[in-house]
Image (cartoon, rainbow over all chains, first blue to last red; front, side, top):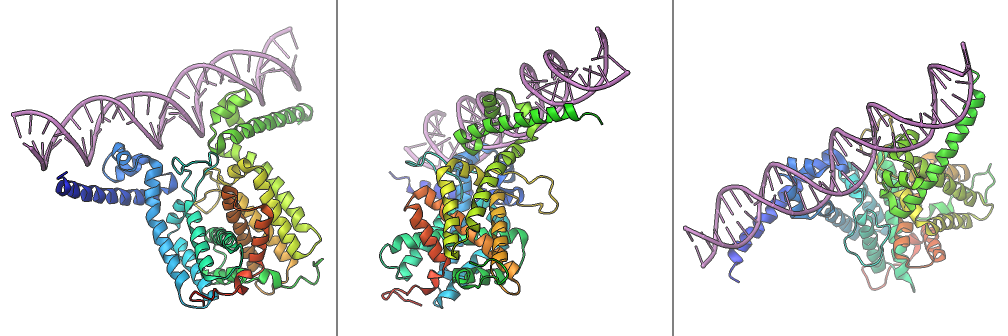
Length: 215
Length: 215
DNA sequence: CGTACGATGTTACTAGCGGTAACCCGAAGT
DNA sequence: ACTTCGGGTTACCGCTAGTAACATCGTACG
């Protein structure tokens, strides 16, 4: 059992190597998009394919490892925005802005995270059909649901409401952000304001058009 | 230029054939998911690959043709729900319900439409980077934006607001629907009600928890 | 009637992908 | 000295999307 010295050194070495490989992979993914090939990644790292497979198992494993870092970073950002001690409206706007700033400043990372072709979530029980992508969105939704549950008094059944709202708001953020990133129809501040207005019930209070068949 | 007779007959024949091929493709896609191979589709149709390529150009073309039908059908459904002469809240709920009913009753079609691996949108000008999937969501968002613009009096800059809201609401519907379809945490009616509440500004009016650091 | 055309269909192939088996080598441990 | 083991390579498998070349049948036209 006296392998701590060697084993420890080895482990740190392999982890360093792993990080190097991940950085090379990131460079290639940023250059070639989500369909970067293992050959290209291996070449960028100065090695050949089997090493990648030894480290990450399969392509999904590499992509998951690669995604985890950015996912964690983004989640941390959003968590701080969500914890700011300000008015609720300001907090919501800050969170939206943090997300949009992230996807705006690194659109290639965003596209990679959101559309990882498809990977399976491993040997999961149940759910035999139809697993696809975007575990990030699920994590975001659950995280937001937790915050909502903690902060708001939603009464009985509030936990369900919080989860619905969490995933709904995240979906809204994602959908609008995706469209905005592609078309750039306005500034980030404007987008944040419009979305916050929507969440603040403007859709319900705005008047009908006078000329149309208003209902 | 007198080829109308033959040409017409031929065209109808080829279109019939095309429909047959599409139906075979649909059967396979429904069975094998979005990564159905061209070989499998051709085999199901009783032919071989090159014919598929003659009819649809490439795999993206086949998938686009296949997606178009369902997309149109879904859009038509939502349009009728969106045009119902009832209160705005009821109309919103009906639209949400129509969407959720569609994805609930045909989840495989839904997954195929939403995650078509990745296809390029053809020789499009501009947008050299980052095209991915889900043109359906964009169409939905734009359609909803049109309805909002037509119906609501949003004042100056209202067109932008309508588009933001359209894509935001569609994103909310999509995100929540995707999560709901996977976890089935509640009935469709409950989900619709919660989402409509969210759009009706409940997030802004609900009270803080008394025990937490409410802001 | 013959013939040229056009659409339908096939076989056989290329190029590249993810993934793997077999082997190689140099540095540590006893 | 000799074994063990992790990092690395070559060469391969099975599969995919996509294509070139060839065969076949029906129909329009001289």
